[in-house]
Structures are given as C-alpha cells and as structure tokens.
Amino acid sequence: MDLLEREDFFQQLQDILVEVINGHGRVALVSGEAGIGKTSLVEQFAATAKNTCRVLWGGCDALFTPRPLGPLHDIALQIRGDLLTLLDQEASRATIFSAVFEELQSQPPTLLVFEDVHWADEATLDLLKFLGRRINKLNSLLVITYRDDEVQAEHPLRLVLGDLPRSSVKRVRLPPLSEDAVDELAARAGKRVEDLYAVTAGNPFFVTEALASQDAEARSNLEMAKGDNDRWLQAEFAFWLWRAGATPTIEQEIAEPYALQIAGDWRAAADRWQELGCPYEAATALGEGDEEAQLEALAIFEKLGASPAAERLRQKLRTTGVRGIPRGPRPSTRDNPAGLTARQMKVLSLLSDGCTNTEIAERLFISNKTVDHHVSAILAKLDAQNRAEAVSVALQSNLINPK
Image (cartoon, rainbow, N blue to C red; front, side, top):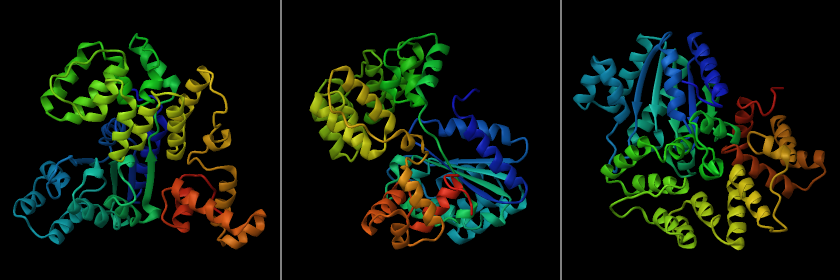
C-alpha cells in the first residue's frame, strides 16, 4: 500500500529496527491525532518486519473499565505457552512482567506493538515502564502508538514516557497531509470535493471519508456507526459527511456539539466544545461564525500551534476583505519541525552548551526574564519537563547537532 507523505517515517522505523537487529533494544513512540494514520503506518511496517523478526501486537480499547493488561492478553494468545497460563491464573504482576521479559529474551529479535496506549489501564502502563526501562537488555523493538492530543500534562501516560531512558527512545510524530497530498488522493479517487483540504485539515481518515461520502462505502461506514450505539462515533461520521456536502441521516440523537454545528449554531457548538475541554474543535466551530468569532478562532489555533488551520482561516478572512489579520509565526518558525523561533533555537543551542539563564541573557543581550519566557516556550513545544530533557529531545529530533 502506498502511504502518501509517510515514506520518511516508514524509513525511520526501518532504521530503528536495524539498530535492534544489531543488538540495541529500542522504544519507538508513534504519535499523532486520531485518524492521522498511526495504525496504517505501523501495520505496513510490521508486514515488512515479519521477514526479519517476530511480530507481536496488542491493542488498548476505549472501555469504561479497561481489562487489566488487555493488550498483553492479545499478545499471549499469539505466543501461547506459559504467559497465557499465568494471565488465566491471575498470577502476581511481578511474575507476569518477568515472564514477558523472559519471553522476549528467549526469541529475539521481536517487534512488540502496543496500540492506542492513551486508553491503557494502569497495569499496562506499569508493564510498558518495566519493559521500557530494560529495553537495552532486550533485542526487541517496543512500538507504542498513542493520540498525543489526548495525553495532557496530567495523563498517566505522560509520566510513563517521561521515565523511559532517553538514549533508547525514538519519537515518530505523524503530521497531517499537505494540500498537495490531499489533492492527489482526490485525483486517485476521480473526484473533486470543494474545500477538501480545508474541511479535513489534512487528516487522512477524514479525507478518505469525505471522498467516499457519496459512495456505498461511506454509507456502509455510517450504518456501522449507527449500529455501534456510540453517539460520538455517529456524530463524527455525520459531521464529516455534512462538511463534505452530503446529507447524513441518523435516526437517533447524536452528540450535542456535532449536532449543533450541523444545525448551523456555531456559537453554541463552540461553547459546548469549550465546556468539554476541546479547544481545537471549539475554534473549528468559531471559524464558521462571523468576523469576530473567526478572529477568536485564529487566536486559539495560534495558541495551540495548529498552523495549517490558522493559515486556512487567515485566507478565509482575507477573502472576505478583513484587514489587520494577525500574521502568525514567521516562515522560519513554521518551517521548524517543533515550531521554535530563530531566537528560541539560539537559546536551545546555548542550553545544550550547559549555559545558565544568566549566561544566555549575557550572550544574547536580553534580560533574564526574557530568557525565562524562551525556556518555558521551548519546554512546552518540545513536550519536555526540564532543560536536560529538552536538549535530549532536540538531539533525538535533529533540531540541534551533538557537540
């Protein structure tokens, strides 16, 4: 299967696997929003990797009461043997974790995938921490996929990821598709959907659904959503069909924010999204409103770092003749993978040299307070807890070069 604009990420996973085969255990964190293509990428990678290593796969489910060690039950069914017996007997956690470790040691190399870990139960998170901290002793690649937009500062997964050895961790974050890629998908489908890129924000899942919105496939998916009895799933399908120009028909009540947007009540929809703690969705709803609402949406997109959505909204405002539109980040900032400004990159480079804030202020001829602001922004953009972690992430992401 041809995965558009995912070639570099696929190659990155292959390079990590080579390190594993050469005896260096690794953890690969594959992240991105829902529908961005994490599963498709890892599935294609696993299909290739099975020629050189054993592949084991377990997934977490969005359950109100997740089954303890749910993904491990999936994996144990693939392995059979002692691990499945221990789980059935509800052995102690320490015994089960040791059995997993010994299993991975006994049959190297292994590609071990834990999918949708943002839904993981506490026992699974403990297992991932246990394996991750010992991965350098295993000839295995542990791939963890998760929705980074659902892992806020207080999420328990954040603590687990922060506790993994930086030297063994590789990050693979999938961005939305570009407008060119969306156009190519539309051309392959032999269709032209107005404002397809603006409507879908380059999300591969939404692009596919929008292109299929008048086909039997999309209607079939919508029927599946109806049968699922999940108001949010039904609402999401209905909303994107509506945005693509179709007229969705759902027989029962769907989730309120989507229903309000479909009904044209963008203000009420935005308020409801804000109440639910979903600022991006709130901004999307405001973007359908009047000039004041659109400028409010633009500010939210900028704060979230949602550059493609912000730029589309700027173009929409310009088209309607609005003046004095905030320009947003400079091209150099947009081109930076982490969204760092040129000044923040200088600060980051000095951090890697071990400089204190006072030393940075003296070298850049700025105040200590300004340095504090830059350091805080760098930590936030790199999803780091401290200066040392920020430098480590920057080195792994090739934002700065080793010295």
